[in-house]
Image (cartoon, rainbow, N blue to C red; front, side):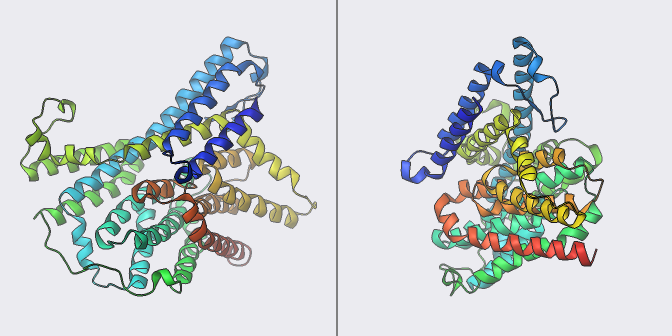
Length: 463
């Protein structure tokens, strides 16, 4: 049964990558794959002898001896657990995207557009790369990607040019998210799991992450795609609304407030994002002089709805991308629940030659972690990091945990669907999987390897 489920996942994954060739939207195979995998699990529950407890990040000891009803109960609880964790990400994403759309409603991004006076593609590349690197560490790589691609769409009119910039933004955002405890979901997992501390994480990963961003951008400056100037007028435009700058600063401040809210309250990030959305939406309604109730959409007149910034922003949310995210995360959760991902990571470690010395063990661990980073480009990095939590038992701030944070955070850049930032960018700019693989993946790989080598050197000789 496990083999059949792996085949189903592979076929669904293949259908997603061949979206443009099959002319089928990627959300269809993602949702179908999710439903079929969980259906097979429910129908064949008695045939499974292992089960992964996501809450404890370990395999259950006695799952094989449980009866049918007990196994079904555990399956339902696991499904609800993963749906809840996935919903946290989706609600957070919805809040961030709505805030961005509200800023755009007031033409707030024209304020940043006004700061960028240059038409040089190389200069714009470096500006956006450093903005992605810094913003992702503050507001997480997912939200930073949403914000920067929204700004990019206002500055670069040519879609072909935007695709290149978006690809480098993904690389830079994932690199920036790796050295901050709130920059990426995997570093947040390690931080909450008391495997890394903020100070040591920054000490170990700031330079490797910076190299992971700088080297691909440096190589890209010599590529034909970034030669010359962008098309269109980059002169500062008069904002369509006098509240544009106010809404931009308010919106970005509200997003930055989310990790502060989480630190103070210890509540999940989506709770703070909903509070931030409520505050931004309130000012948006005041500035637009329009009353609006989210719970009473049907009762509004067409003219009233048109003038509501919140309603207008919600109507522009890319729902297919949200559903695709739901499908792919829940499908991976199905494989994780059976312990397949945990078993794969553990087998990978055991299958590599162990020479018996401490230095050899460290080298093997480095190789395993780098392979996990490459694997995070194919499979979601969250379950892979969860598996690593069970593979290793090193204490707080052991360099191994920092290397895992780097590999899982930046390795996903090698494929467009290997990271949350990539998935969002794919939805916002309709980036083709194979275009990204041919044009950007090798740059991301070089950056990943450069950062990994820098980390190993720093760990062995500096820190």
